[in-house]
Image (cartoon, rainbow, N blue to C red; front, top):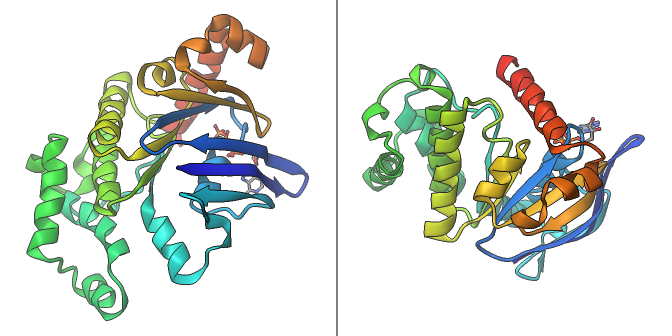
Length: 266
Ligand SMILES: Nc1ncnc2c1ncn2[C@@H]1O[C@H](COP(=O)(O)OP(=O)(O)OP(=O)(O)O)[C@@H](O)[C@H]1O
């Protein structure tokens, strides 16, 4: 179970996340929605401490994550795999190696240095990476350079890399914002599969309400750093959207489409 207690992050005059309190049961698929600048990315990055809180606490199974440092913080970050909007693969490397990179989180000291220098992973690790790729229909492209793959394929490779960390939590920051609808669907299906099959908790930032409704157990809507809705997807109907955001669902969707277009050309 993940618990956020009055979590706050300020950047100069902006309060990106403003006193967010929330409990996420293990195995939940939580969709976080909000207009641009609502604080979604900052919230995710607070969870794995890529961004440090200005105030508040994060607890994981009762343990104070906010107080961790050194190896314990590294172990927490390994528990929280991150999936990014732009995939963040090494384009000139082959797909299999990109996936194996996720395993580096489990290597330390001399062994890690050796792997980094020589790129030699064990047969067991390579088999694990291939199995992950195979699960998402990507085994055939394992030896191709990442740059030869479509965006949707690249994002699924990034998910395989995340799984190599053997995470407890996946933090997916706008994972489908740069993808066309078909690829977006494939990536959301893959995320759901991982959530359902392994019971990995997923926190996923989304621009599209419909996607959040279709795939998530629960939706958190943010506005100006605050939680303005937290509940079952079906409770966030058109009337509630208007209530919460002061715009219609169609306007919300149009904004999301514009954001998606900006992401695609970025
Ligand atoms: N490193 C930073 N320095 C200064 N301001 C920041 C920083 N990161 C985020 N912010 C500000 O905090 C607010 C929330 O940003 P955040 O990226 O978390 O929102 P978001 O909901 O993810 O938006 P988007 O959907 O556009 O990615 C914004 O006003 C943003 O400009």
